[in-house]
Image (cartoon, rainbow, N blue to C red; front, side, top):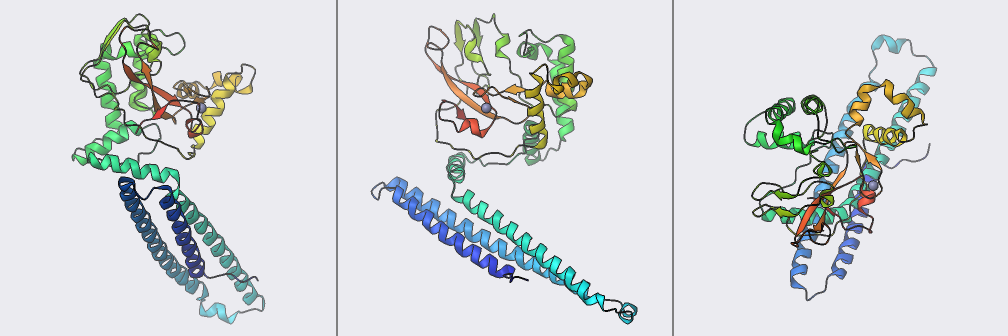
Length: 382
Ligand SMILES: [Zn+2]
């Protein structure tokens, strides 16, 4: 059997490498900032201190984790070696070799597991020094100035409601996801006139009928249909004057620039402020549901494909898929996972209005792959 390094040795080796890599990275960072640029130098010192603290913390955690897991392993090994007295009497020659086989198996498994942990640790370090992490640091800095912080919310179609749920918990009000959805649907039903103008059939551009609206509300209440899909500016074809002054609108809906407005009022709105920042995003991992939804949506556009012939037999599936969206760059479909961006539209240049104002209009992209392309002027929303 080949010699296997102990887990401690492997970890120590890995951590030494990580430290070395980080020092190299820090050197590159230092070289990139001119010595006389005091402001950036100061930021750099802070960033470096943060990276070093994070790595130390990570190493400490890894060590703790390893010590815990090895004590578990010791106990389980000890248990394995315990045998009952009457078994011992029946010891046969094949037995020792069987135990050692099992031990070999365990060793191999442990080595594989260790290897996996090392790979994860490596990836973590890469992320730590990668552009994504740098961006995160900058974003955190900006948020800190406003006494805000980032909270991760899973993108499972419930994210808007989960975000509200989270904030309610902070205020010691507890409303479950289900209750939130039910209340939202109830509010929409009782204020149908406020919502109907924003709900249009994506194909015909017609306003929703009462039945369609009821179905929409039911989806809000009972399914993972995502929140914030009051899209469909394309349906407001006859709109000439839009007055949204003083409300909480921060971004105009997808396709807003295609309206033929004469006048637009939005004084007093907290429209997206022009604090733009370089951003490169790492590839995301899509859920199996999202991947299969995209595949089915793609296939369904080909009327000869098996998928589009089979779909009518699955009305529930069709229902779920009816909330699909399309990437503004590559035109590929997506279902519940997308990237929210804005583009800045000039009301005079792009919309033919008399007054010239720059307004943020929502754009949806299918992936970070598309976002990272350099042939667009879209900005991620943070
Ligand atoms: Zn795309």
